[in-house]
Length: 188
Image 1 (cartoon, rainbow, N blue to C red):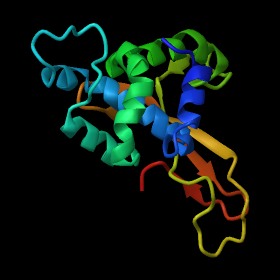
Image 2 (cartoon, helix red, strand yellow):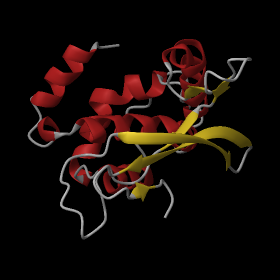
Image 3 (tube, helix red, strand yellow):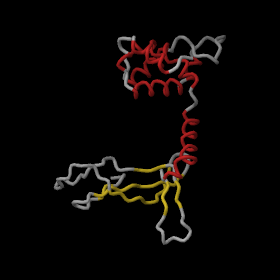
Image 4 (tube, rainbow, N blue to C red):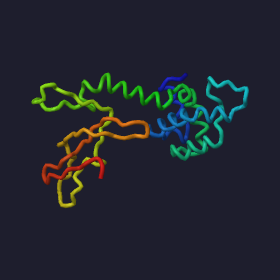
């Protein structure tokens, strides 16, 4: 499998793919990886499934073009360059679990998604969460406020986020404008 510099070099020679954004590249990789089973279903029965097939099915090409913003005519070329990486990627659920474990192991002790309650608390209790919910904007939304810089005064509150699979502890971050004391919350 080619390393990153080889992949970037191959992309740079292509008249369309040389202008891919990082977001388009990552989206192509994650989505094509997520479609492995669909890609395999469209291959001949005797085709080995351990390696990425040479040709993407037309419906997969169309989906990837629409979802990534890459021209349909360039999708097969992108596949030719990136297929081994897409095929080797872990399923998205595994990536989410790896991220959760990284925050548990390395993030909480740095204060990411963990909050120490006031010093008067004798137990020195930490509330640990994998999610931090921020407001949709970092600037004051009060039309009467002339503040143009980003808001930095924050307050974190414990919340529970209900997902399709579970309820999870989280922080809801509120940003306050010092000049007018306008509080921005993550949910309007």
